[in-house]
Image 1 (cartoon, one colour):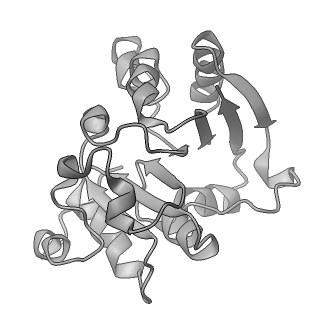
Image 2 (image 1 turned 60 degrees about the horizontal axis):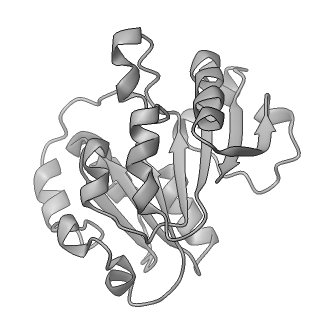
Length: 208
């Protein structure tokens, strides 16, 4: 859900060292941006940043890039960064641009609580649709790995079928993440909220 406009959001984003402003100029060269050869993981639709920030803190030898469309959301992530995190960058962009931004340099894609776009006519907007899966093809450096979490059962079922139809193999699946033994799970802000409400969270890891 889009937040209300945040006063001064554009200025905060413009002046932040975490924001990659000329993000298309780094296509194929993101390792140079981080100045190392560590793996690069991206989260498409990072929301207010709980997941990507805590992942970067937990795994300092992996570079993380969070992608979010709206100023009013990405600025909330910036406000949560209290200490220097050298392996974290954020990009304000629409996911539809993804092919113009990365090329054979991503190791893992995270899709957390993506918009389900429930109407059939909006299928191509789903981040797990065949249209988007084809956009991801040239992003990966080698093996293709997508990790997805959602509270929407219909989207989850649709995504599993979409992944398999596109040639991905299901490596891990949880139909109730709260009751699983996934001790390394790092929660998003939505996940924390839904967990308190007793809602079921689904997760899958697919590889190709």
